[in-house]
Length: 44
Image 1: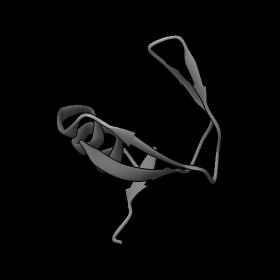
Image 2 (image 1 turned 45 degrees about the vertical axis):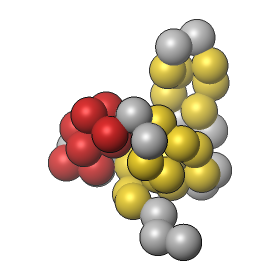
Image 3 (image 1 turned 60 degrees about the vertical axis):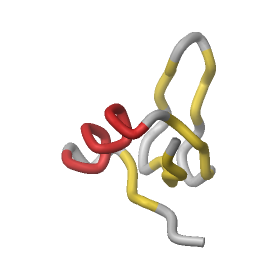
Image 4 (image 1 turned 60 degrees about the horizontal axis):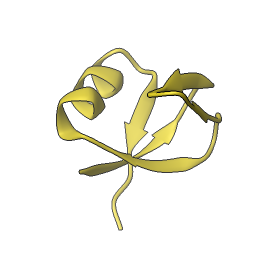
């Protein structure tokens, strides 16, 4: 699981992920979203 910050609002597995919020999602999806600029990685 990877923590990401959303740059846009989107639906993911029936949940609404809001822009500007931090979520934890699976690594494969996180890599796709980061590459397409939908999300940015979060370092703790």
